[in-house]
Image (cartoon, rainbow, N blue to C red; front, side):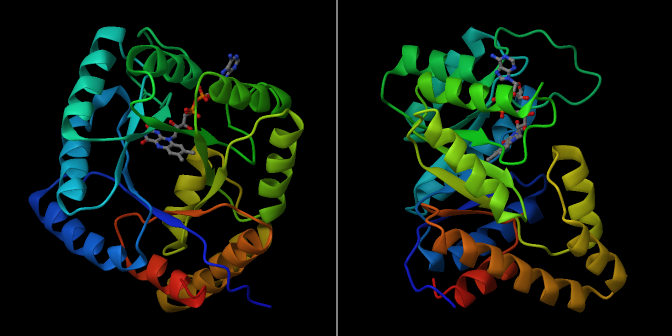
Length: 279
Ligand code: FAD
């Protein structure tokens, strides 16, 4: 049964690396604005590697009259650089951040003055009060470096205690993991919206590569079906749309507060899923 409840959506982009990519993203954004997203967020390469591209994309979104959230990662950063970047974001008119630890590419030394995202959240609150609405990351299937599911949950609670307003999850294809996570968070007395992150399935190899790296599980039946399609990209797309629309239906029916789409700078899959959801 399909539910007709209106549910807010938000959309995530990454900063393009080429002028052609910038132009293409401009047109992708225009198409996705038809969904009236609550906000559009832009990822931030750990170590500040994409800072210019991230901030430029955020500027473009704001100039287009939409709410923009800048992702902001702290691994390898110093308090002085973070302070400077926060001042820039404030001047740009940014009101929402996704505060993260980030992952340094191999080859970078550790260093930096922040160990965990909770340190960043606490620092932003201490420095800028309530100037920013702060999102943090959540992991229904457990962060790959967590010592245990329990310690990961406590790490999540620490980010909320430090001042996070809301959370966006890593993507997943098993709604039970999300609902259990929300229950566990509730049982800890942590009360912030936990918005599921939705990854449309567009390409089988890309999905496998990402998922191995970030610890998201592709259920066996989905993995086998995708493998079975081989290079038949039309079948992969059609199957992916069915699977992800069903997932969104379950999440909406189960009370998810919103849906956050990892657009991968493409519009077709997100638009089709939302159209099937009646959004
Ligand atoms: P944290 O919350 O600090 O957690 C990292 C690990 O440390 C976890 O295993 C946690 O259990 C553990 N931990 C935390 N606190 C403690 C403690 N006090 N004691 C012991 N262990 C602890 N990456 C990017 O580089 N750029 C992006 O733009 C980006 N956007 C993202 C958006 C979303 C919605 C999500 C879900 C992830 C995103 N990531 C991004 C990936 C993210 O940076 C990585 O998953 C990273 O490994 C962890 O970041 P975090 O903020 O969740 O870290």
